Length: 442
Image (tube, rainbow, N blue to C red):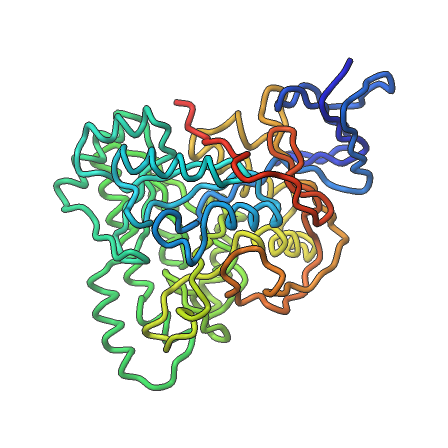
């Protein structure tokens, strides 16, 4: 049998098991796993001895700032950073300029991403105010809809309560999941106005300015809308014990709710980190609660929330500087380091960053697994490789990261998308425009 690519001698990792296996690829798809006969030939044979082969990691929450904010990032630089970070598919958020809020803007953004992205991509749209747009965007391939209950980059206001309820009912009928940025704008404005009067800036003060109360109320609001509309919902970037409790209780009541958190909420602590992100980094009690929620299946997935800004913007006084960090390239290495520390297993990571995101956003089984017929997307990792994160070497336009100087063990050494090497041994091998739009399979 002749294949396009064979990965030999590696250990393949699924959420349930890890085993020595070869993988054969033909026409961009996985066609066989297991021990391949020596008579099998391929155009390219990759020896993965000593390495682990993961189903392609999905970063289902990025802001590549394209169009309109490309001084911060664009689909070319963002996708290159993702590839060097071990990511095979990204999902981009709608708060660009203009906002991705209707079919015309969605199609324009799709064209931009097709011209620039070197990894596969999916696109969110802002939940529109008109019902026909929902069906049109579904046909065009939108991954899901986003609602900002609290302001972030772009200062996008949420829909009015009646419009939100009616549009969520339409989404329920269409089977499309709605993701929520769960903060409460009025509370954020009030508490921030109190905090700016204090002189000693700290991570705890940033958390106080957008308090846990703000997140909890927004999550409860989203849950209530889901209960009465029947819509499937997702809570982006959960930061708190209080949020976890609300999500757990909603799941127990049968609400179709999923949740994500991010490496900066799992690894950083407001008591010793004042890096500004929205929602903010919390204290140690909340950080520990997030790991516990992951272990208990309350939090379903991890994503980077890559939200770059220029160096000049991030150097503004803290209350004026925009919120966000550069995260898509460091996401995988940071969590692999936690695997090496015993915080979670490599199988857990595959579940949290490949299989489950694909299932939540209805792109499974095309993505998120190593089954025959799936896209031949692989993240090959060396769990012994040690390195120190150096922001100067990151491939994003943004070089702002709280992880500069962090020592890690575990690193992606090859990224394959639909059977083609995008990155191998620190070398970028793809052309911009290789990435395809990934749409849900309803």
